[in-house]
Image (cartoon, rainbow, N blue to C red; front, side):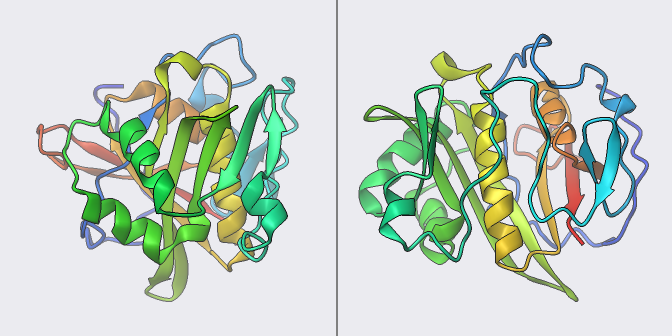
Length: 247
């Protein structure tokens, strides 16, 4: 996908999201297994504007993402932003194949989030970057935990963008020993449902144009390629902005 030609919807033509760390997002769940329920050719996805992929057809206005996976390791999200303050949810959202998905609780989890994300990112970020997102939007931060070890994390935000409420996936990482288990997809699904329950109209993110596993993961969850951002990262690599319309 080195020379991707975008068919941009261009709902927003300004590159005004490049603030704080808008280029943080890298999906570090590499080598997506072609034998999983993910679709091998993202060009075959049945996606159109305002639609979300669900099996063989696109469906509109889904309250949460019923992807009807063939594998039990991919889950339907179960956390809403209205409920994360409930002890039951903050203690543990759900457990799938031994991995538990939990909402962010306190600063003690910060080092685990930083450890997971910093290991493979091409750009350095200070603790203040993490605190900007997590302290302002703690309900949109989730961790995947195996027994007492954090093996995946997602960090997001949600705020007003022009006339819509836009969710933004800033960071997503999975421990290299736990990849190919749908952990990244499950984290994204939990984050998206939390955004939906908090009134999000759309979700966006950026990822390196060369990051094929990231593109496959997101496009199989219904994201479409919105625009190409040239020399977006410090290493000179272009980014693709992906967008998911929720309404």
